[in-house]
Image 1 (cartoon, rainbow, N blue to C red):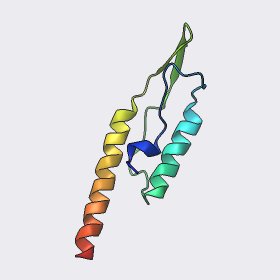
Image 2 (image 1 turned 90 degrees about the vertical axis):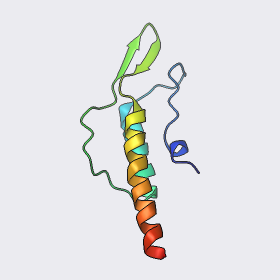
Image 3 (image 1 turned 120 degrees about the vertical axis):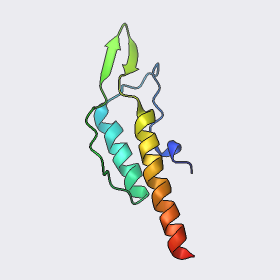
Image 4 (image 1 turned 30 degrees about the vertical axis):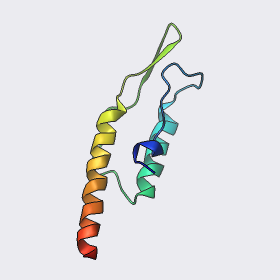
Amino acid sequence: MSFQKLFLKIEVFGKEELSAVPLWERINIAMKNYGLTCKFHIIETARIIFFKKIRYLQYKLDTLLFYLRIIYDHRYRSEKIKSI
């Protein structure tokens, strides 16, 4: 399973209500599944703006996913080197 598939697929125009709490809970669960801990502080929280029934997620997850990929890649490579 790819790293991205573990995370919420945020549907900007979806019917489900977006909430910052389950979003971060799911990120934490996904990180724990990989044996990762959050080494950096997420200063900006996911804030949702409702404007004319269109939902916008103000915080972009791309940056977070990028950092998590770096952490995962580093861990995977270091484990692979140890096993050789």
